Image (cartoon, rainbow, N blue to C red; front, side, top):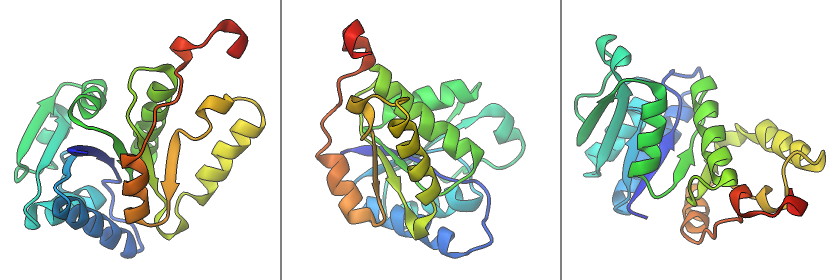
Length: 193
């Protein structure tokens, strides 16, 4: 994998271990030669991730909507900083520039990005792996909810493993690299839907 789109919070959480996770991921990706494509911010987990990756000599590509640039949250230290007009353009560029997705702890925006990446994989808009680093058990409830959706029949069997989740980064990166795309809805017959 040449680059991963990394989704994570722009807030600084109460528990400093989440910032440590973001820094560890930034350094680890840089040491493996995997570039980071992220939201372009300098605050919270975003800033910690980007700063650590840059300090370790990694490539960091920020993609930020112009309204956030004017609020002085843009990270001008990125290898490249793309300024776009909307969140829709931002997410499309994440997909275009990356070989896969890696979600770290975050809030509503992070969840929006994760679910869109999963939805697009399910439909067939991309065939890239969607990873979830379940650091400190942060995503336990989300993974249980995803299973509940599948158990209720709202997630087709072919798509029940689109989210590749691990508690540790190394096994997660191995699984992302070994990813085999699922059959997308666009290629399924009516009887499979």
